[in-house]
Length: 312
Image 1 (tube, helix red, strand yellow):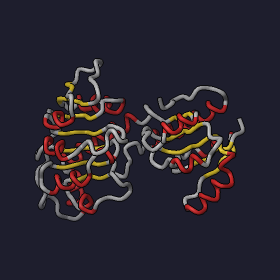
Image 2 (image 1 turned 60 degrees about the vertical axis):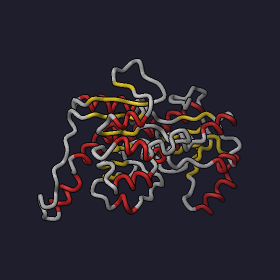
Image 3 (image 1 turned 90 degrees about the vertical axis):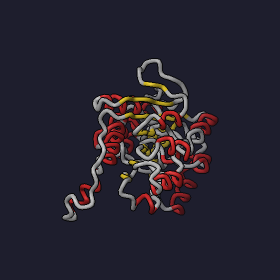
């Protein structure tokens, strides 16, 4: 099963050791000049690529790997994987769905509660010795209306949790899902208008870019809260900043941002915003499971077997 594997970007801690025991591994340096030298030296040898859904290499790097056969990515997102390009070259692509759905759903609910109940402001008050001084009352979550944009694996996991809060659940995606009883809305503006909380779970890419725009935010309204555990590109960030500053929505919980890791200063200073560093799947258990799928997909390919989790 000897093959040269290029590792690009962060990997879960159980990946490199396993790959090195089965393959010849080359870890792409972070410095651009060093990376270019490595690609020039070993590019023609590379048959497999291990990467992640955020730091996947651009087409220019893939072009320099003429014998690349397989890309195994840690993460569910595919917008950075250049999957269409890969298909055109006959390169198979795998990601790590399912294993992160429950943790991302937990994070979505966590952000919803933290924003609505002003958890971070309360924490700062206690730590700074202010107790209740300047702290307004929060708002309840139970019996409220939850809109989910994207009822895939993660969206369904969020909905199951929301049922425990007796929330009325609606959703929008390209078509209604006959397997669920939640209320379907045929456009995101209508969903936002009927929601107290709107959780965004759709993938990135051209079809969802800036889907959450001024019209959607205004439909969500001054009592509404936006949660994003999908991709930062889905939200028109300047419009979100304006809506928050002007009180056109109540608050936001954001695990993802448009230009990670760069965060607009305005968002960093708003008490009604809770921020996380693209960390929704960041548990030991999930990251190890994601890493194992990366290794298992590469092993399967070079053993002549089908990928366990191919990107269709």
